[in-house]
View (cartoon, helix red, strand yellow):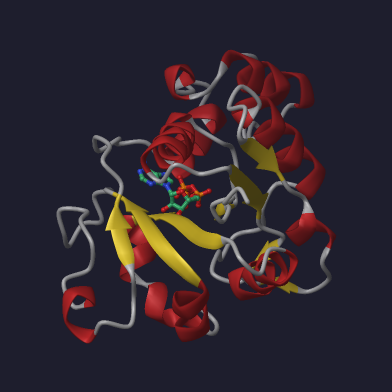
Length: 209
Ligand code: ATP
């Protein structure tokens, strides 16, 4: 009888508004380091923790497909965009756990999200269902590593992704695009073309880049 090892499934949620090079580096690093069989990249619907209005879902979905499309094990998944009401990671994680009861689940995030993880809805259930994999990110009050207290309370299984710090944010990209000086090197050419074609992020000055 042959033994099939349990699947290793990653979940990577984000606004991806727009998706940038650090998102891609994080996904690629996690697939390799965690030896994932599949990584679900899940653009958030109505993200409860973002104060601004996000770019319409169909644009963010299309950009995510262009952006992550070259990673063979990454699947861009629209489940949160189809869900009514606020978007919660726990709901997607429960769905994946139900569909793959024997799988090992890994939840990917940057250190900025890790710092506030304990404010997430049902974070203890999330921590029971999934191991966390955290990418280093400068957060202002830390060097971007795992939150210190996680080492002590033992509730959270977490790994630090072994990737360099990347000083990139969607906020900076959006404001660069608005001002007509978009940091194009942090966007894939196909995503930049999509943005230009649909005149996204240029509402203050409608100009080409
Ligand atoms: P915004 O600037 O609009 O808040 P963002 O650049 O943080 O956006 P999100 O789509 O909110 O991008 O991020 C999705 C996930 O990717 C989050 O877990 C976030 O922590 C992580 N992430 C984003 N950028 C980086 C980065 N430069 N380094 C490490 N992780 C990142």
